[in-house]
Amino acid sequence: MNYRDEIEAAHSDPHQLERLFRKSQKQDNDRVFNADIAACHCAAPDNLLYAAWFHRLEADRRENSSGRQPTNWRLALPLSLATGLILWLLSDNRLAYHADQIPYLAHLGAPVLAVITVAFVHATARKDYGRAVWTSASLAALLTYVRALTPGKEDYRFLMAPHILLLSWTAVGFSVIGAGATPLNKFAFLIKSIEAVVTGGVFLIATFILSGITLTMFEALDVDIADAVMRLLFVGLPGAIPILAIAIVYDPLASPMRQEFKRGIGRLIITFPRVLLVLTIVVLVVYLVVIMFNFMAPFVNRDVLIIYNVMLFAVMGLLLGATPVTAEDVSEQLQIGLRSAIIIVA
Image (cartoon, rainbow, N blue to C red):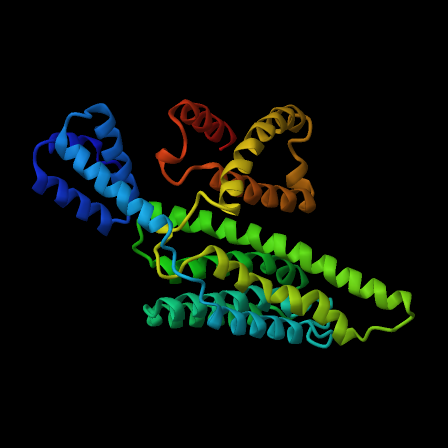
């Protein structure tokens, strides 16, 4: 959605521009309104109404860009420790399906993270507690359903693990933005989720390196590490990371559209997928040639079908990461090329 035509129609009507601005705020589209005002001001610099709005919105933008609320460490740290402890307890070898030894953690890990994430966001924002309760109850019902169908179905247990992960992500999204959120707000949530995952991934790599060095040091001294300690190093500590990553990159007091996207690791997430788009198109061309000689593979080989499904999730993630939140995030020269690349891959 854009407001350019309506802004130009109200070029001498302050009341109408104020109405448009408040309408954009209600729809969480104020960034779009700001960009359209800037474009109108650039096109008609002598229009005093455009100039006044442009400088007003620029002042607000600078104030907001430096006004992110401090991270709620008093809540984030205890919740992260509690998450790590819960996941560590669930990683016990005795808590597994006896038929195939798939740990309960494969099904319970994502919902646990989702419920604690929801608790952190709503406790910090101090609102929408009912939505948080409904989200947690829905995840509990989902796990009950999975457990009811689990006995004697090894393939079902295996396939439900990634689906529970995605459903838990969806539950967090519903809890944060609600069912009636605007498309831009939903998209901003997806982009911010990717940023949180990448931030957590960086922390996890550092945590695994630290755990690996610790384990190697004790092995060099011929010290046997108990299984509980091993699980603490490689499950408990990493389990505390996701909540910390979310606390760092996401401000619960602001809607997804009003989050910061252009600084820190967020800028890397904006740039890197767009570079990958070019490489993906090259792979796509080669794939289109090869698939003609292997067209029936997913119909006769279940492993190929599963790999195809994983590939589809990866491509969707790439498209999400490469798409700008608003048009102002990309220069006019790059917009055409980026749009073409996205459409080709899609």
